[in-house]
Length: 312
Image 1 (cartoon, helix red, strand yellow):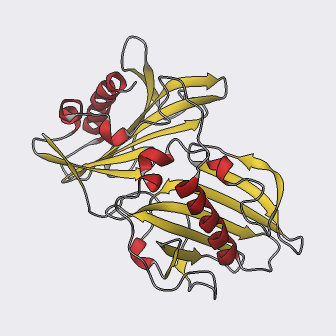
Image 2 (spheres, rainbow, N blue to C red):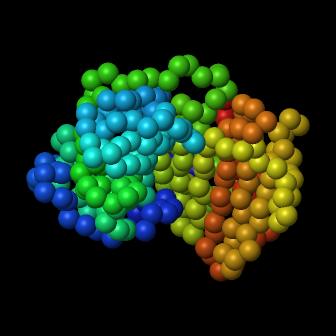
């Protein structure tokens, strides 16, 4: 079995309803630069170790006054509230190494990177500075002017401008984590062909990052999404069942309920507290008409057994 990088369609799930809008006057640099291919400061491996809330510091944008501290619900993500010079609230959510957008929709640039700006209403703007293509990856900022007024796309642009400069000049780095932590792990590099063998047929398997901590493995009708995240520890609930991956690791299996042969297996890799753990999930889809859910669950469970042993 051969693992190959994939330059095809990014299959990441996107939750933001998007309508392309033109950049506001003065918000972009004009023209659309090419995405860099060799900027180590913006690589996924570097961004995994950056402190995202350190980037959204008090002076991230000189015209913004911070309201409270930054909050992060997952790796590579930070949310912080500000007020503008007129006292109106601005909510900023930044994600490092984001996927699930279309770089060819870029209309301008920021700090030499292509910039996409999309919006669902006049108070919201979702901006992405494209850091690489094939697959499309970037740094995203969701700016919300909660009481109207101002220009959300301009706010997003100013935050991205500051963040990119910091990343290139002197990024705030996270302290070393637990040796078993997945914070700095590239999931695309974890399974070798032997680990993937139970889930795929003979032949090439395309490998493509989805974001900082997810990866897609694809072959013909079979797609497997691997995710690592911070979250509430997983446990058995209605519609799921417990499966044993090793003597020490149990997982929660959720068979699919659609016409597609799909199945998900999740387990707690490393606990941080009673309410937070590093959780790994494998979502298996087989779109072949001859496949069924039982087969999907058997395949993804066998893959999970190998992944547990391959992870730190």
